[in-house]
Amino acid sequence: VAPLADASASAGKAAEGSEQHLAFPSTSQPPRRAPTFQQPSPLISFSYTPQRELEFTDSALRYYVAPPRGVKLDYGYERWIRRPEERGRLDGLLRAYARVLERGGVGDIGIVSWRGVMTKILTAPYEERDGWDLNVMCVNGTLYLEEHLSEARLKEKNEMEPRHMKMSYYGYAFESYCTSETPSRAGRPVGVAVDAPFAWSGDVDTNVQWCSVVKTKLGNTRMVIGGEVDCVEGHYSNRTDTFVELKTSMTIRGPPDHAKFEKKLLKFYFQSFLLGVPKIIVGFRTPAGVVKEVETFKTMEIPRMVRGKAGAWDPAVCLNWGEQFFDFLRTNMVSGSDSSVWRVRFAPRAGVTLSMLDEAGVADVAGAEAEDRVGFLPRWYWTQVAG
Ligand code: A3P
Ligand code: MG
Ligand code: MG
Image (cartoon, rainbow, N blue to C red):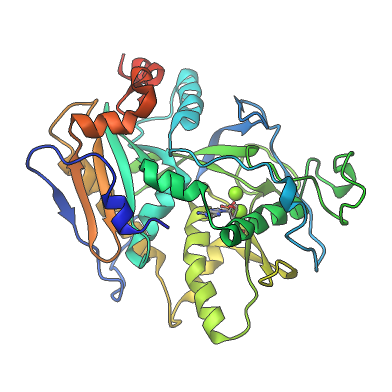
């Protein structure tokens, strides 16, 4: 939700001279072709503990259990352990990727990034409201992309309005109602407060996350993408076919709500598609957070659901755009060196600009830990891949 005025106030000016621009494709004409997107396959998974330590275990993996209807999503709000917003660092993903590299043989990887960044890029042709900034580096031919959050923007995200904070909590509370630490509800943790409503699986701690790192390919570009997976259905065995994404959304009361929901499905779709998550389970809630309906969507069927509708979107436009976007980066990030940092700025409807950061810009990106970084990459990782 970055307003552009704020994004442009961030530090880091373009280095002397050049700023490249890439305009958007028209979204009214279906593209003649779209690049293929390979079925993602997991390379490795990891968990963040309540202490926010990354460990290569599946301790944070959760199993889907159907939530009863009528549950209230404000339950436990005052006990929410909320992880503060951080800069969009790649550190965790790179620790996992480095492990994969040690095992050897993933081929030529063109792109490494979090799924959230990839979703922003691919859905940009239809984004009408929120701009975003990325920091990009190209090391040994691999592009690394992180979201750039200015200090001001971080502060804003951390000081969310109480109403927004509560709505944000609803999504996590739904996750607690829908998941269990074991494949069946019977195994839900003991020690839950006696007044806990039926089916509550434990208080929300947003430090805890289970992440899957997958390998896939868009057109000719192999990529490694990491992202949180809300839960699995039944079991997990190194495939994405049991992955489940959980979502909440306002109940639909009429055609305008329906159109709004179909627009939202674009983001639901790509978020899941990019990690190979085949199923999205949506809890439709009232403004006060009561779940009225739970509906399952098959990710691959979503584009067909919206085709030909008023606010229709076409995933081919997005995939085509994605390929163009990465070509544009590779073609233009030629000056400088492997330690150069580039800024990509997206503005709705206008398109994207690319510029190399000057020294002050790079220092701003490295932040307080400049000693331990090369550009925005952790120095240990830099030594390992560049050395
Ligand atoms: P909902 O998506 O059900 O609203 P995710 O769905 O990606 O797994 O994220 C889990 C929850 O985190 C979301 O649930 C939402 O409550 C919260 N969340 C995600 N992105 C957010 C953002 N940009 N601002 C506020 N809350 C956010
Ligand atoms: Mg999630
Ligand atoms: Mg979710």
